[in-house]
Length: 478
Image (cartoon, rainbow, N blue to C red; front, top):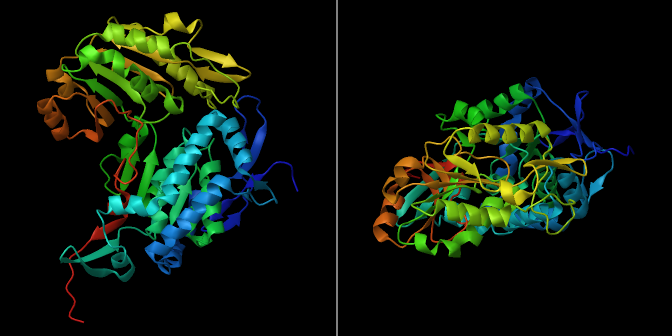
């Protein structure tokens, strides 16, 4: 067999080798880790005429059976040796960790944490679905109708498949589509260019667990192919920057996952205790290498912005690149060096506007963008901003970055804008009620809770059950 693995497209479970392949390379050494077959929109359109058969393959199972198979898949994903392409290769967990780290820049310790998150989601899927459906008896989905809560219930599927245009920044984003399988919905995935490994391994784990292979599409493709996935499946998720996600912001069939602009708010009643909260805030900024949309990217305070920014900078500024297998690694490398260049230039350009200071500069002992053992890294940046008027006050980057912004409590909600995850450190009940009524916060934590904290049995970044199944009225005479 060839020394270089080849990942075929999976055309609803059928491996397909294309003449058009890309090389996925190690971000530090340039070593080719795998060849990945590419497909075009025409192939996708032909395959999508068979989505009814893919859905039928899952309809044979009850939701409870698919939940059990998902749990088995979770164990295989975390601990199993699974097929890796079509040239006789297999992949152990250690090989998966090393490969993903090599091409994405995530250090091993962060890959392992992401693996654990995916494992937890798969092995606790019953609890997840219970929370998303508000306690629905899923035999009603199996039968198509039934009675619960003292009323008649019926649900119908909203799509032929769930389409996914995935990113390369963090493997844990794959947790968002995992409930679809137990909800009897095929998945059609366009993987991220530098991160085909996680969706491919998850698919292989599901198949090894006993889920029909035809329920899975794995289609590395171009922009035209991505558009076909988004516009044909009936329901889809897309990940990307604001310019990408804005194109689909008003399409209810497409759930967009762009920047999160997640934040900490410290109220007037707790600001004198700010030193107690530095550790949880610093962790929320830097965990997972700062690559998640739920990483805190702004800390909004009524006063002491300079002191808080300095305390965060002292804690995060010294973070420096390490070898990828260092268990204490804090930073991720960039597979796309142009992205690191862009981030660095955006921060530098923003600092030219008066009213902001890069407080980490004096604690870094070197440049923000740096090269270590062939890899390019962005070191943490904490910027103190005088107000939300500054261009760096409400920015988000794929690295440990946050602004510390001075803003009166009375103006916070009118200034912060959309916020995916908000941690409000306050005991002021009137302020809490105002925050709870604010419509532009997706996930709310009250108290010193990291924005990175996830409750799997609550919707986060959309409700997959309500996205894939819609309730209808029903009366039966027979």
